[in-house]
Length: 140
Image (cartoon, rainbow, N blue to C red):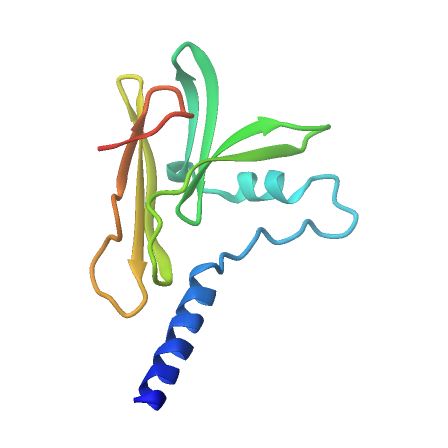
């Protein structure tokens, strides 16, 4: 019984550690005038970005690793990302398998497709969220 409890604790500790893993952006190359966010924004495909007007204000949103960020100008040509949506918390490690940002009639829809390791299909938690301003999100 003690051995089973020890194995369970090791497995739980490993899963908890992995659940918190989320690789940060790669740092900008030495000597670059652009920061990591500006380079990552430049390299992000159009289907993972929204640039337009929401609630009467210009908005730039970007999806990166199943999280939605507000993109704002910073010093020079650099950009600053502010996290605005990351979806439901899941107790086990997950992987981002599908993500998208779409707009229709003044509403942006974010699809966050995270899959639990070892599981099939998609998705953990609530995968779709909608926003009229890019800041406040509601599950669909």
